Length: 502
Image 1 (cartoon, rainbow, N blue to C red):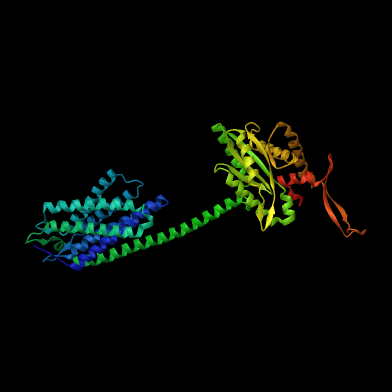
Image 2 (tube, one colour):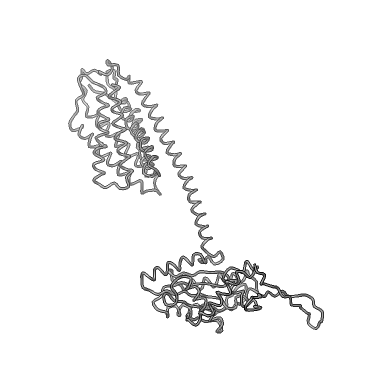
């Protein structure tokens, strides 16, 4: 008995195979990228049903396209078994490609199992016709159909795995892969049909046993397939949009968090690390020095003459001077060095060294770099730097001592004429202790009303009548007596108490 094909239904079967392939590839990506096991299981089961139903529908649409000169029906139980084989093979395939790795051995064994599952779906579906006498199969075409099923499965698994790494070209690659997979699946089906030999006097036993009518089956297949694949694709599209929105939100939150971290750990003017980040960097540098055996230098840098620039030109121009200074010094440092701003015109450099000469050379390079005037708004601004250097582990055993001793060395340079550098020595500790004592007393000076204002009258030149008064802040220290601002204001600025003093 020889059958014929309805060309329109053949085309429909191909389109269904392509759509099922696209759905399968999309579902495999959802399974692999799911953030939880529960979501992965939902996508795995839903994807297996959609993919399995799609392949099974292609098979039965292909069967509907095949016209025999006798009435044809299908046994309900065997038809259901055929669908189950398709869904089972699809679930195994989706699980396989959701693994992080798909080595060649697993791919080949998976292709064999998946191909046999698809072939089982086809031949169980053929058996559902319950032809009497039964269908004979040409061994060559039969074997070819199984090999095509295995080859198509191997191609599908390989393509699905590869598409996980082709994000920039995902859509065109997925469409092309769906076309290739659809043609391979249809090729397997029609090769299997070519293997079938229907006896001339055969009848369809499923008709007499009350099986599914071919027209009813056609309606069920088409409606169910379109509905299932459409729902699966719509769910996938919705999930993709939600992931996109979630990704945009996550990216936005990450950017906001990065800006908050930047603001919390960096100076807003120069974008250098601030005091908080500097402390962490020093501790890390000390740990690294302990492991590597290299030395560590902390350089405390204060700009000479910066207050005069602020008084003469204003804080806005002074800020621009600080930015230019930070850029010049940053250009001299290595990427592994730390350059931080504590506030005002105070900066700190932390660098690993082989010998103290490395720190001295850096201090000389900084002094040379800022020796030329800074040109800002047609103004030539001259500043210099007083740099104090403390070494680890020679001068200090921890971050606090290192900062304190470098500060003491910087003060020594200030009192020695400025514009230079000095290494910390034990003789500088007395000045450090005095400033530490002043700091401790200054914390309570406001509460004890020890800060007082003295008013100095101002007289015009050649006049004897006061036309105003200048307010002068003094600290009436209980032990040291009346102290002028140049004694305690620098301590207040370095400690942050200047805000409390006002």
